[in-house]
Figure (cartoon, rainbow, N blue to C red):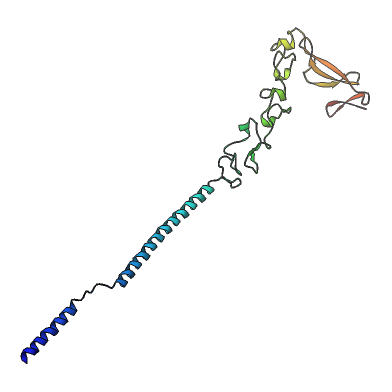
Length: 228
């Protein structure tokens, strides 16, 4: 009887040991679930890459916007090529840059330089002292400067028989009878005499008759004047 109990105990111990040796590997269904989770993560990783690409594309769009910002805008006061000017920025140009003596250069609404406010150049028919024009700088408008040899004896510029014989003639022993440029009524009282250079280089009185509607010469405030 004792022997039988011992044998039975051994048998029970063996069964218990075998149950402990059962494979504890994860069931196949659980392994598939793990794989599915990994697959989802992979998809998420792909999406993340796509998101990065989208960000890059957004940056590219920003770069495009930057390119658009480089386009010159007429009227913003900033001079950029191909603008000739913008607002008050004339690029350092003025009327003299166009060969015009003065005035004000401006910028038109199309950002082009406008010379309408510049003064006309020499040759417009007007001798403008304000623009620096005179006989020496602009003969077409102001005429030829008086010089010895122009055929006119002009004491105003110092010409006389001694300084400019071609215009005033040779000096003689004649005597001036009046002060050059002075004026008086003639002896008959019907004209005004002016003191001029005579043909021999000396001063003489030259008479100019009074007109018929003011035939009488009188001295008014020291000036000979024809009147009635």
